[in-house]
Image (tube, rainbow, N blue to C red; front, side, top):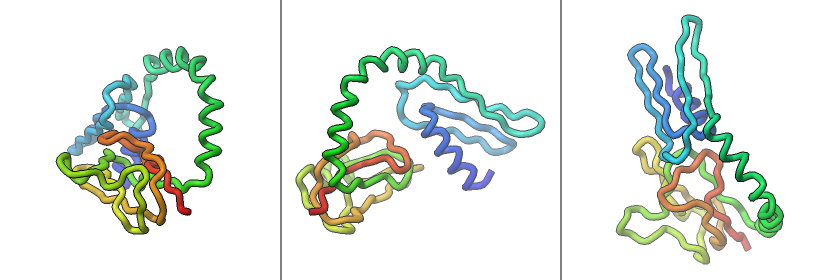
Length: 167
């Protein structure tokens, strides 16, 4: 199994909502944990004679989603209005899958707060991926309007992190 296949597997696990997947092929053993233990989606990896097959069993997750759908209908109009207001802002998105941190270490202050001015190249946050800490730099100059992700929470590829007002 090469690096590309492992990266694709990580992306699949993150999009599926599973909290943990274990894969064993020959002498390679991989365990992927997304960090969110509240979801109960299970992915079973089977290796039949002919190749690999993925089965997903989200029955436990579907029932609660159906129950909450009617309650979420009312805030949908508010979210649409908020999205219209946010259209003038630039969205800074996550370039990788990992864990989002607003501080360089627990005892240090955050990189940026709402209302702070940032220049192109300023560090906004850190995303930890596979024990590597990646500094995420601003691609635009402007003012931080909103932080869209909680500290120490998992993020997916291309997930919005910040809203920046370029004016």
